[in-house]
Amino acid sequence: MRLDTVWLIHRAASQAALRQARRSAEILREQGVKVAVAMSGATANPFPGLLADEGGPPDLAVVLGGDGTVLGAARHLAPLDVPILCFNVGGHFGFLTHERKLLGPAAGSAAASEAEPDLWQRLRDDRFALERRMMLEARTDRSDAVYAALNDFYFRPGLDEVSPTCVLELEIDGEVVDQYRGDGLIISTATGSTGYSMAAGGPILHPGVEAIVVNPICPMSLSSRPVVVPPRAQLAVWPLGEASRRVRLWNDGAHATVLEPGDRCDVRRSPHHALMVLLEQSPSYYRTLTRKLHWAGSLTAAEPSPN
Image (cartoon, rainbow, N blue to C red; front, side, top):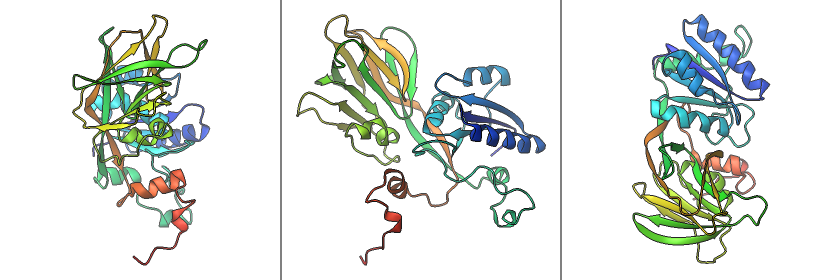
């Protein structure tokens, strides 16, 4: 991998992430790398400014934060085919991040001799894997805007002063499948299956599976159940009901737009993939689930079965 230009994106309001970003920037600049450091958060979107100031995308984006910071980076960098290397600094679950520290022991310390070789040289030597994660895109008939999501899109009632329910009609490949009455609807990727969709009772999909999960939120019908459809499926969602029953569309937990009853929103697989840099030689998704979700308490300490 070429490392002529690197962006260091750190989580907003995290001093630990900022310190690591600044120290990494010093090291990279000493190696002749052009570096940009920027903060990302719910109210801070650095990517349009970086693209304008830097004149183009970087060779690598390093994200220091939790899954939310990673999702924001993926939405903006996937169309540019920028590899993303993520480290969990202050995040909660960290499904998309490496747990190891970005910076190793200080040079000359007792632990430095036992640390792995310099991370940046390892990347230059191509000693890593690149994982392509499927993404989704959504369009409405109100504008030409295209919304992207690595985790999910979800539709929720837009009114706070009345009961938070809505009616959503779902069409798959031109056929009306159901009308969901309840708290909303989640459309997620396999990556997003361990997020909001899982919390709403949806299935967990391995990230290597390219599929789309359609999951109603608290449906007022025993027959409304999560459905997994092929990645090529074309989905459309309409809010129904009175004119006041607006519905908000969210992508990866960020507010995208507002839909009026009768508006159409098309959701499909994005032509772009998030390119995630993997440093582990034999990563185990199931071990990650065990550790992050505390399956069976802790399987890491369990004795292996004789089978």
